[in-house]
Image (tube, rainbow, N blue to C red; front, side, top):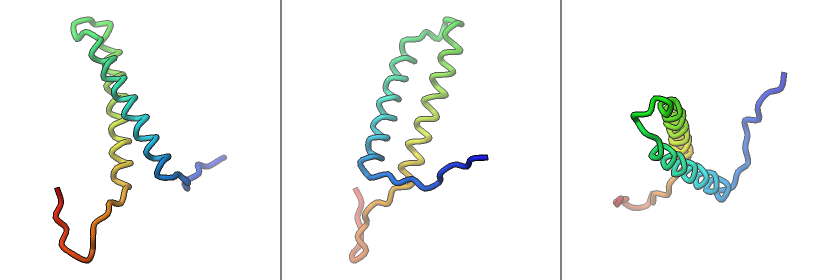
Length: 81
């Protein structure tokens, strides 16, 4: 049985492209969701599917963000903001 490749070689530009594609998909899903009516029962299943897709995309964006290492100077006190 084949197994999954667990080692990916992606550049920073590759990750940025993936993030931008996920954000663009999220915007498109948002437009689709706004076009549907909450009162029409036929739209309710479509709304559920769209919202699930939105949630999955946002969770993936969150996991990508959590894997980033942000610069923080170690030689002096860091003041964020």
